Image (cartoon, rainbow, N blue to C red; front, side, top):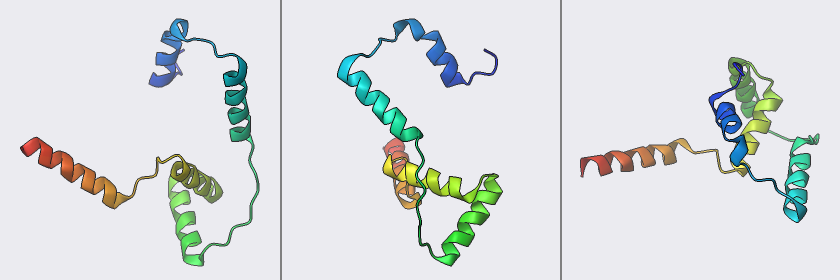
Length: 100
């Protein structure tokens, strides 16, 4: 239990309040999980400069560049990838709210 993250400890502590899922909903969830675990090889054309930069960033993060590409694509399709300019606008809006 000492190796659990904070989130994992929270889940473990609330295990008694979790409700099992059955029927069609369970089948849908299991299907999504099964598809998410499958990796598919693709061929991708990318600008040489972009590939060099990806490899540099991946090396600095200590991960393979293919993993970095996969992570970025996943964040994009799950709306977790945020543009820096949009984040800066949001921060500015928050600052303006605090001064009002």
